Each structure stands twice: as structure tokens, then as C-alpha cells.
Image (cartoon, rainbow, N blue to C red):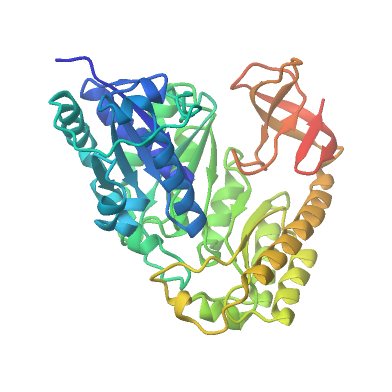
Amino acid sequence: MAHRTIAFITLGCAKNEVDSRDMKDRLREAGWELADEADKADVIVINTCAFIEEACSESIDTILDVASLSRVSEGECAIIVAGCLPSRYGEDLADSLPEISFFLPVANEESIVETAERAYRKIKDAKRNVAVIEEDDDRDEPLAFDPLAQDPVFAYVKIADGCDRRCSYCTIPSIRGPYQSLPREDIFATVKNHVDSGVREIVLIAQDSGRWGIDLLPKSDLSDLLNELAEAFSSTWFRVMYLQPEGVTDKLLSAMAAHPNICPYFAIPLQHVNPGILRNMHRSGSREEFHALFNRIFKALPSAVVRTTLIAGFPGETEEQFLELCDFLKEEPIDYAGVFPYSREEGTDASALGGQVDEDIKIERANELRTLADEVCALRLRRFIGHPEYVLIEGRELEGICYGRTMRQAPEVDGVTFGGCGETGEIVEVLITDTLLYDMEGE
């Protein structure tokens, strides 16, 4: 069999990273070699994000950058565009991006080996019909893409895919389809593989993690899964990302409180607190309901950490409703907040709503809310000063200082903790001595 190399460029969220990892595994088993540089591969897979317009633009820009590489324009390297962009826009992409050999929607990613083989044969048979793009002088620099080796410290494990919610602003259901829980045995097998390879933290992810098991026979739930995982892998940290408010059940809180290796971390996308805005988002809740939710969390787990996401400038949002959102952020125990201006996405119910907020006002409100979040969340983080925390060491800076994360810092989205002494992958106890915005220092 001919020597074949392939490279991946992954955009978007952790779920895309998991999809890329799964595709890589399939390709390795089929005899493909992962290239150390994208522009030296026979085939390049771009796993795209298309959640909002900004993500679509980044995906298109990346595709055009890759297409401008000399090996691509000379017919020596094929491009496969996978993931959310082809899932969302389908055949429309073929006319606008003739440089691409194949498009692979999320639903068809299991056929990555067959698609890569077809792309490889296409270039080797010199039958590839791709427009040649005039390259810029600086476009032949190696492109950054996700690492070949699995991170030795943490790993994302997908427990479900798709979504049955119909939030009026969201494109995910049309991209990834209905909610589908992964079988328990598949999750355990994936976790075991990671743990056996030295991973110390498993981050469980889904579009709606709290619904895991609802569609399985017999039915199960996230608390059962967490109980079993925490007991089976007692030296491994487990973190859950993307819980909707109703997914935070008393049973789940009890499971998290019962196991010291389950991170007391709650990533709960609230999006807004005004009942009218939430109804127009096709969501439920209110300022009072979310306050009661936080009270339940901290009663069960006093040292818990809460992360949320908030949308500014949703259609119909008045200045008064925006200020209500700001007041909520000031008053509630939120440790991390991702803030986004509303993005009007074609095909969503919200795009047809009246009262669309001017772009300048959306940006202004989002910036104001983001500045407020930095102020109140950074101040809240200081409550850990003077307390010991376990830190999972992730590496060293050039100066030799260790850095890592506590159970209260999720990978890639929160800060890190500097200090302590240990090798990568070790969990050490650190006394927190100071904070700087979202980072902590200790000894």
C-alpha cells in the first residue's frame, strides 16, 4: 500500500476536537500516517465550526488559506472540509468553494477513511479538477493544527451528540441532528483508553450533558454515569460541561458531593434572566429561578464554581432588560461568564423576530457586560486565597515555574494556577497566595 499522509486542522469547540480525534483513530487503523505539518500532507482535513456567523467566517478564511498553499494549487494535496460548515450549508458550498475535493458533514464523519481514500486517489490519478488560486508570498508557512498525540493531562469524552432543544437563536439541531446518548459501554471504553495512556482528567461533553441516558434502554441518567465512572477510576478527575439548568438535579448534586474526584464545577448556559427574553429564546427560567438554582448548588457543594454564558442584544432587548442582566451578574455567585453579542443566524426563528437590536448597540452592551464579568468574577476568585487547592500539573514555563489547574478551572476556557512543584500529570497540593484576573498563584 502506498505511503499516505493526512493532517487535521480543527476549529470550534471541544466536541469538534473529539470528532477529529475519532476520525484520526479510524485513519490510523486504516494505515494512514498523521503528518507533522499540514502543508506536507497528501490530504488535509479541515474540521469546521458554523455555530454563528463569526465561526463560519473563520472556517471560510481557514479553507482559503489552506487552498492557497502551493502543494494544493499544484494538485499534490487534496482538501476535505468536514464538520459543521457542510452540515449547515450542504451543496451550496460546492459552487462557492471549487478548491475542495470532498465535503463531509457531521453525520457522515464515520466514512472519513473512504473519503480520504477517494481524495488520495483523485490527486494521484491526476484527475483533480480544482481551481488554482494565486498564492501570496507568505502562504507557504506551515499551518498550525491540532497536536497528533493525545494530551497527557486531560481528554474530552463525548457522552452524547445532537440536541432536541429548539432555542430560537441556535443552529446546532439542524447541524448535528436530534439528541442521541452514547452507550455506557462505549463511554467506559473511551475513558479507560485515556486513563491507561496517562490522562488524569476526563471532561465529559455534550450539547446537553444533563439529558444523558434519557433515550437509552433501560433509561439512565448522568448521576448514575458519574457514580460509576468515579468509582471505577478513583484516581481520575471527572468534569461535566454544558449542563442546562433543569439538568442540575438533586440526584446529580448528591453524586458530585459523594465523590472527591468529581469536580464541583457547573457550566450552565443561562443566556439571559428576563422571562420575556427567555421565552423568545424558546427557553425557560427567570432571575428568581436561577437564584434558587444557585442556592441548591452551594447548599450541596459549598466550594462549587459556576460558569455561564450570556447573550447581549437579543431581539427586543430593552435597556431595562439589559440592566437587569447586569444586576444579576453583580449579585449572583458566578465565577466565569462567557459573553456574546447576539448573532442573527439565517434559518433560525430569532432571525425573523421584530425588534432586532442595532449592531453597534449589541457590541456596546456585550463589551459592557464582558467588562463587568471580568470585574465581579475576578473579585470572586479571590475567595480562594489562603486556602489549599489540589492542582493538576500541566507543564512548566520557560522560567521553570509549574502551572496547572485546580478542580475549579476547566481546561482551555478558565485561568490556570502557577506554583507548586511536580511533573506533568501529577496532582499536588498548593496553598493559594494571590490571584490575577482569572489566574491564581500558590506555593
